[in-house]
Image (tube, rainbow, N blue to C red; front, side, top):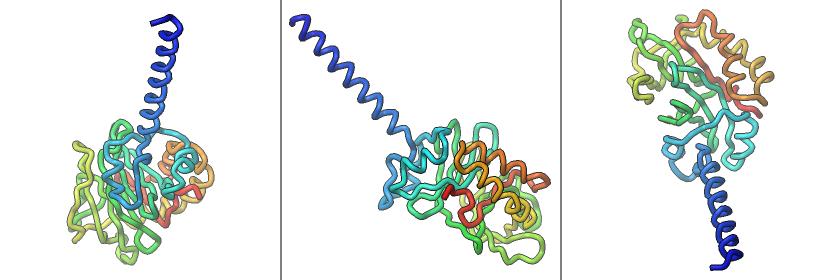
Length: 220
């Protein structure tokens, strides 16, 4: 083989390696493989979400209507995030930026979602709970319609019986008072800026609490 042919072969091989590296990098985006006519949660599990600006991620996946709703730290190295994907709310758990579990649970003003410590038959839960609440409670608490406990050790959502489960109304009201300010100041920045802002409105809350109400965390 002549030197010229050998150089051409090396150049082609180098180009091929670069293409594979680029494709691998792109595939690392958790939302790249999502299709609205398939199982969205299953497609997200095991994929990585980088800490990029929200607007960049949303723009990249505008075809699936991606919108960031908010997030919170559950424990060291375990984080919670909520995203609108294909007109539905998906709640994610992440460990080391990799999605370990995902559940679909839509929420609205008439069915707000809640993440934090609640009570079951009057006793405080020893674990954080993700719940969709009935806002009509009159005793200082809001009763759950649907709920999952968060298994911190395995980074999983575990479906639980919502009967007897109640979450503090005050936590929801305090956080919502600061939501608009956080949304305006952070919607075009990194996800961590929005989460840090929301944390400032959780003083006095019962346990670790994050609430979404009527898509407040989206950047639209």
